[in-house]
Image 1 (cartoon, rainbow, N blue to C red):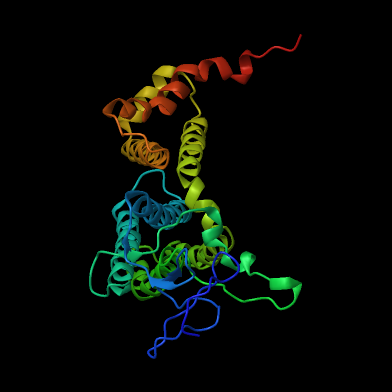
Image 2 (cartoon, helix red, strand yellow):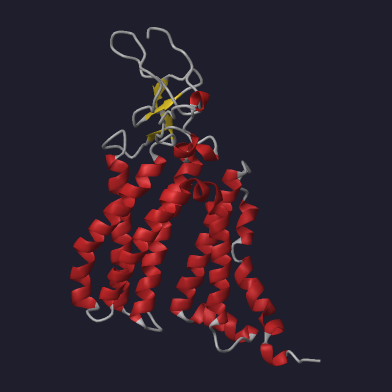
Length: 302
């Protein structure tokens, strides 16, 4: 076929052969996407800021789960040196996996990423949009229309597990031999869950992760304060500034909340104004100021 005829469906395309002819309609190869004329064109767009925020969220999600599991298995009220070492190991693993993922993504050896920009939710689920011309034979045009945002996360998870298995056991054996191994076991459970969630809901996560961050950071912040035995305003304030562990946890919540606010603003096309930073500590102050009104001992049944 030496002329370009439009293909049925949204993601079926034709490749240009060396002899000047076009192939039959089908899936474009990896790194290509069909254009409005059904020609497979290379992905030459650069990642936008929101794409980087999405990739950062996927890396932060794995890191926070690592730190949460380490903190749970350590069973320490403070943060001793051996626990800090395991926390730093998780940070090193995620950082290395992220950098290597960027290096092996096209263009290889560069921290810049060429992509096909995500335009709508269906771009993440091309499997669900294979056309059936005349209700006869289906055309299989499944492809990565959001190249490489979909596969990058799988590569990142694989590298994270590999680097963890190479680095973490050596440090755990030396610094936290009893409880530390359970943090590795926990990661071997939650990484497959994260992989399944991304495989099924990658597009939904892409468009909703800013709200997920804000909701989870608010809930986690409330849960952190709720576990305090003394719920008076004075005690909550003093423990928030005097206990090193509490300071680190609260600052972590603030950073996540700020990340979520910035992501929402970017998704909505709103310029990030410095006044938005005033919203970052709001959940913590709101809990401290209103904790006395939720004391169950002050509730009396009529």
